[in-house]
Amino acid sequence: MAIDTTPSQVATNALQALPFGNIIGGPLKACIEAQAMAAKTSWNFIQEVGLNTDPQTGEKKTVNVSFQFIKDGRVAQLNVPLLTIVPIPYIAIQTIDINFKANINASASNSKVENESTSIDAGVAGSASLNLGIFKVNADFHANYSSKKDSTATQDSKYSVEYTMDVAVKAGQDSMPAGLAKVLELLGNSLDVCDPSGTLEVNTLEFKGAPGDKAMLIATYKNRDGLFEPAKIQVPGQTGTVDGDNMIFQLPIEEGKTTSYMVGVSGISKKVIVKTIDTYTDQKNRELARIEREQKDKERLDGMQKEIADRRQKLDEQHQQELKESQERVRELEKKQAQEEEEEKAKKEAAGNQPK
Image (cartoon, rainbow, N blue to C red):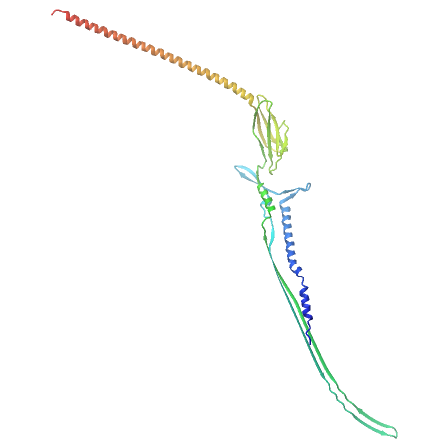
């Protein structure tokens, strides 16, 4: 009897019909979708936590954390972008391991059993009776036949298809994308320490020039949030022009005067005093004062020289007088000495002329 191959063909067809593309591609697709969801979650986190959207313009601005501290004996305020101090979730799938195992079992068995038996039993029995009087007829007849045939057929077919798949996915905090790293670097460089009441700065406190000249005052104001607000800078009696982050004023220099101007900020008490100085008139006055000082110095020097000359002359005259007096004394001494010598000589001569 031939073996039935139908189960084997069914198993083979089942193996060929397995959706390997779906079996292997399904987990990969799920991982890709999960990665996309993780990236979208990171973007949603950045938008919801680190950015504020202006409802009117739709412009996005970073959320800053501001706190005050003491620096160099003064209260200072530090503005830090929130994204630079909060870890940004950026989960990425690092490895995907897919293990697939298919197990197909097929079996077929045929069995056929035929049993045939035949038995024949035959028997004849009869009796007859005949009376021709009042009709009497008796007749008995018996016949027996037996036949038996058995047939058995069995066919078994078995097949099974089993497949298992293990998927292992490893994910972790991935390295930051280059674009996001650059953004965070720029935000980190934007850290700014500000005065809680704002900072008002000018290019100089004193402007020097000639009468009729214009002194260019450049003023800058940065509020407590670190934003430039040049339009708030004011100088009473003067009109300024906004130039980028600065407000520029042209201050006149008045002849012979030192004029003070108060630079302030609208709405706060910040003030800086600047001065314009007429250096031409001031230099002229200083030059006249210098000439006068030199003249006085010359007169004083001439007086000192004259005094020195007078003293020298007086000393010379005194010296000449002393010298003259000394010479007179010497001459008198010489004369006296000569007179004494003559008297002594005369005495000796007189003594020699006396008789012995």
